[in-house]
Image 1 (cartoon, rainbow over the protein chains, first blue to last red):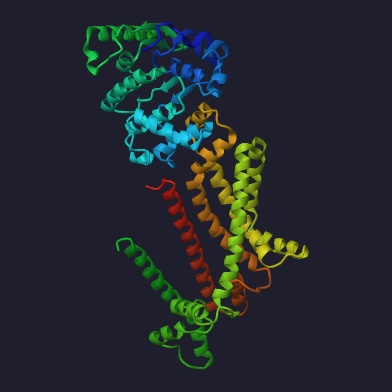
Image 2 (image 1 turned 180 degrees about the vertical axis):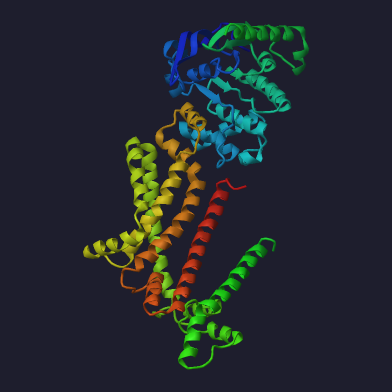
Length: 263
Length: 288
């Protein structure tokens, strides 16, 4: 289904991001070079402070790089933000308690200014996509944590952005729910063909989901390894017991360890 | 029942203490009367009887206050100058107008403070300073100044009310409008939402629980403001006037009845705000 021609969506060249703090400058990102192609599922993994979230936020123009170039859909991140090129899923669902699930999903559509009919149609479509049809009229507190996070994914998908940026979206959920949502996310990705950048702490999650795994290490935040996954597109959960899967997980672990030892 | 019982127990304890205090405080007059008449001091049982129904007791007994309250509300036409309903309404109307003015001012200032750094730096210290001025000192000045401008009656009292009630609303709304966390603001930023959309879509609804908490404090403060505002006007009308005229003429029963009326009005006003709060938050889906 994917085009065979690789088409870069996000490119970073010599990207630097330095935070000025009271204790002096902090190198959140140093010499980051990366290309994310259309339709890829790219995971960022690394210990706290390795800059994986900062990089995601820089793509979303929520942080501003201090050096190098970063383009999203060929534009600057800020232009991309203004043209609503991406949907962003945060670690917490962050649904408005005063809006129903449908109302929450509608939020970006109202802000962008879709017509009432279009709003309802899009809400119906994405709620179906995350298998929350029938829950549109509920308030967030009536849903479990996993369902809330699915609603927040629906909200990010509602306005049909090609890029989905996800910052540890399942980090706060228990393992069983997380496995289920990982499976769902893969299906959703296959169906929609979105380009997904996904930040995680979990090695199995990164290996299971990704076509490309970016291993990062802290002080200064940088990329230590980029692994192209040889796993097939169809991935049942028990693929995690295959030798290929274990080999990739091992390489990620080695990469993380290497990043740590030279600190 | 289990919730009413503790309340009843406290009420009962207060009533018992009150009666005891009434006997003790009103006894002096009884002894004084006996001494003047050259009679021996009355026995305890007689003393109790004589302290319960004095015309101008130091501390009226609870049943005297309740009787006066009933007589001056149910027992006379509401147009009568002695009716507490008449005076109560005058106070309530000033309270409500002042509350509306204070709430409006508080919300406007809060909106200014969160959107404008200069206002953030300058308004809050003045707002706090304004509340350190004793209301008793500033109330007569407001009445006099307004009077010299030809404004009398309701408006000056409402201004004093507003002076007291804008502050809790201001503080609560600043906190409420700032309650959305960075993640919520980042989310709207990813939609490229403008300032008005952030305000109406996120900040204002998020501030509602804070607003209602402030409104409850604010409406009680408004009532205090209206009552204080009625005192320097020469005790013409209102619960404050009843309090003052009662103290002019040593009518302690009248003072206490007015006091109770004021307390009942305050409780009702706060209760009404509470009901509106529950309804609104429930409709917004924020009550569980």
